[in-house]
Length: 289
Length: 248
Image (tube, rainbow over all chains, first blue to last red; front, side):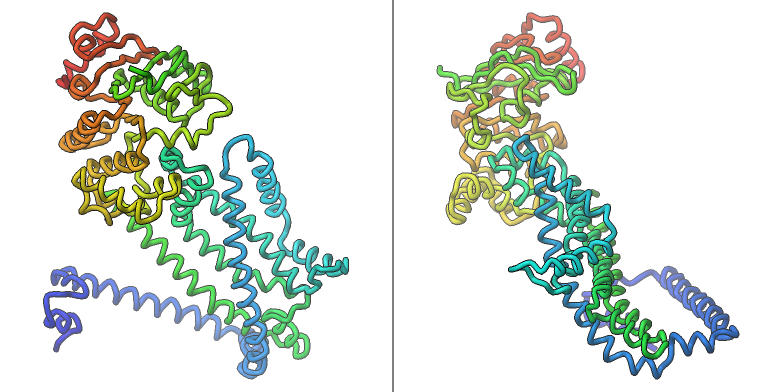
């Protein structure tokens, strides 16, 4: 019998992975077997414990009803599409605004004191306010003012509240990145005649962003679900649609449907973040050795 | 000989710790001055002060007879006239060799990409590094990185070069290739202020040697004089330790 490895090796000198010595191959196979067996046992026990409990039929009816899932899903999916679009628009704005705020905070010299102070006050204030409060304040408050020339849509102000809040956190992420770039890089940049702004733009920030990509991706995951908070403004996004369905049927499966949709987006991003962080760590190790 | 650089009565302290005291030093056009002295004697700080990377507490610095430490002086303009190379290479790790060298000429001196590339290629060719033009710094040896750092400083066509112990972080077998670059610059008449621990090199290349001790220029003079008959006991002590270590 030929294993896939043998097959690959016979094709030529280029191997997909190095051939392990027989002993190591045997150990690898045994480890995989143990992992698989223990996973099956643990998952099986948990399932058996849950499914055999007295309350399971009631839980299944309320949360995992196939009928209600099918009934509510199109409506929830429709709303969820709005969540995705809100996320995309907000994320782009957040990344851009936060970078500007972080760069302002990184400027040195007495002339920039007022700008720096504004950046610090903004970050401190916003980080200290619950995001839901901000959404209610802007989403209901500003349209109530009936200002001329200012959008009155709760959707606009809901997204604005998300952007204002997340940009403050993200600015701090960028700042950590900027501070992680060694002072000697800034000195080198200044010594060849670059201005502060040019040094930041061409030398410091590109390195800083690379250093904080995992943290930024974590922010993506977090925002991806926090966009649902604008449901308090009555915006018919995924969570709101689930709530509407629940209100007329008293069945909670629509919430589960919404949860599944959010998970479908956030889990891959979380996995990607881990993968990227690990790759980055290995690359740095290889570089320093 | 006119003075390219004149440092007058400069003091500098960091958090109350005095690093430079009453420094008076003039560097003439085409002159090469080496700063020697133990670590922490103030050599690096003196170079950073000249490059305006660190402000002076007292005193003044003049470049071509114009004060550069005054409130009206623009550090960005001043730095265009001088290049500095540090002990720890400090190349920009996210940029290729070419991008490292052309950043200053393009963004500060307003050269077009083509002109800057041409200038960079010519310099790389001259220093035997043309084949590394597209490499990234982490793929180069320490000696190569430091030579690229020198080229990056030269690409802005400075009139004065400052070197801050540029061979101290190198493996011994890589020191020579970097020092040769400086020897080449001397032949071209570059004005240089060099902080170094390489005494043999200082004796070779310097027109004048300054011995710094605890932030003070204890003595200065032609290398022959400083190295063979120093007048100060501290200088003798310092040189004796170097000799004992087999470094001179």
